[in-house]
Image 1 (tube, helix red, strand yellow):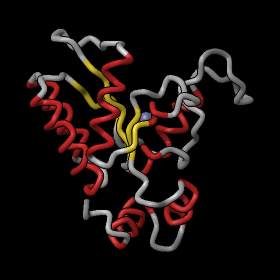
Image 2 (image 1 turned 90 degrees about the vertical axis):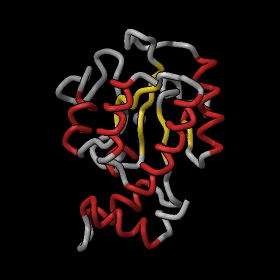
Image 3 (image 1 turned 90 degrees about the horizontal axis):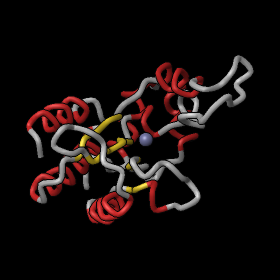
Length: 168
Ligand SMILES: [Zn+2]
């Protein structure tokens, strides 16, 4: 893997839920051995950043006016809890490679490391870059914890710890 990509990946990894980051690290280590240049292009995203992303290519009423980037508003994405990454294959010049077969191969690798690859669901098109782990929670359960008394991101992470999130 290119050194610059390794540096960028490390920056993204440190913002993730540690129990998830560990699994992604192991997967990236495997990719490095294979000499695959894979870059984490999105990791943790705040609720606010998620809302901004949702608004892109929508009008003030929230109706699509082009191809929308996400259907998830703030709190509705695994990215908002540090439990998702988007990973893109890059060539030597850091340009993205669009090759479905490579992603399918990475999906198999992800499964081995107990990471869920969204691309395995053919109904969700365009999200072959997305990998997450839910640790047995639904997104609504995490949102309720986030908004609860000992909430916020660290409240959510504490719940994940209690569920054995650090054991993988
Ligand atoms: Zn994603």
